[in-house]
Length: 94
Image 1 (tube, helix red, strand yellow):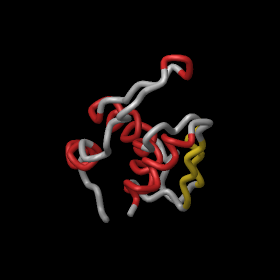
Image 2 (image 1 turned 90 degrees about the vertical axis):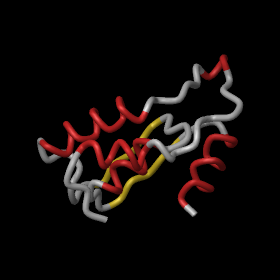
Image 3 (image 1 turned 30 degrees about the vertical axis):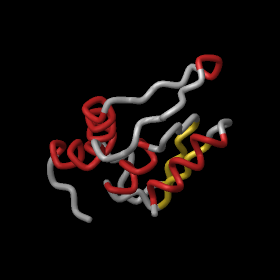
Image 4 (image 1 turned 180 degrees about the vertical axis):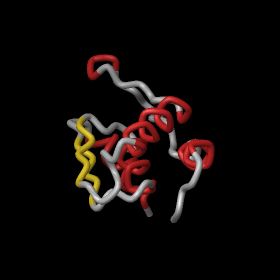
């Protein structure tokens, strides 16, 4: 997929599901698509995503993992301590 505008990236990221059961002790919260798109677009613009390997530590539902793949990351790996978050991120990729 070829993303040519930040707004297009944001619109796609709006479809990443929010965590249905955030755990306070893990400080879980959903990153809004506008913020994720802005951060990813800035990193992409300076050459930090395209063709690179990306690791998303504490990935939650995977919004940064998915976004980096959409922007041409060679690979993107989401890591989280919470199995429920990982399961949700995997489901979102299907």
